[in-house]
Amino acid sequence: MFEKFVFSAKQIEKYFSSAAKDFSTALKGEADVRFVFCYNCLLKLAIVVCAKNNLRVKARRGHHIVLIEKMAGFLEDKEIEIIAQEMRAKRNRDLYDGGILISKKDAEMYLEFVSNLINRVEKYLGFNKLF
Image (cartoon, rainbow, N blue to C red; front, side, top):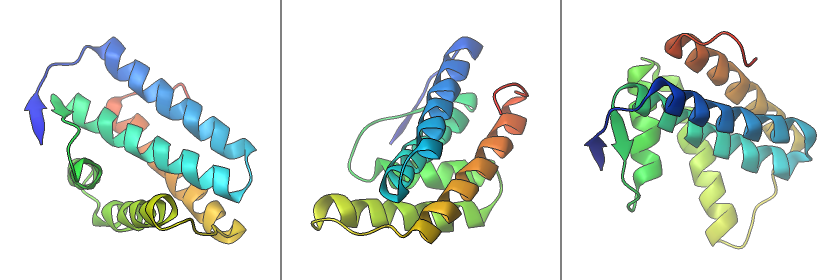
């Protein structure tokens, strides 16, 4: 599912900036928009963490699952995987099962989760400038 690839610091920073942009969009939206952009940000953060470890994911069935697992492993926090996989399952139900309603409370919880994750990834990468 992954291949070895050496990313430049500039590439990693660009991926991180893209995640930050999605988070910024999440901050401005209603509950369903917040959820979608938090999930996108989450995946981009996982890509960034993998890139920092010279891994590039190949888009295949289940690649979101392994991205999340890898990020949780590199950050040494199983709770990341639990919450992120919950988000992934909700996103799949929304996309493939005709939609779901994201409550304001859930959207706020995911927003806080992703905000904390951004801070952890920033520290992991050695960044201290975007948030």
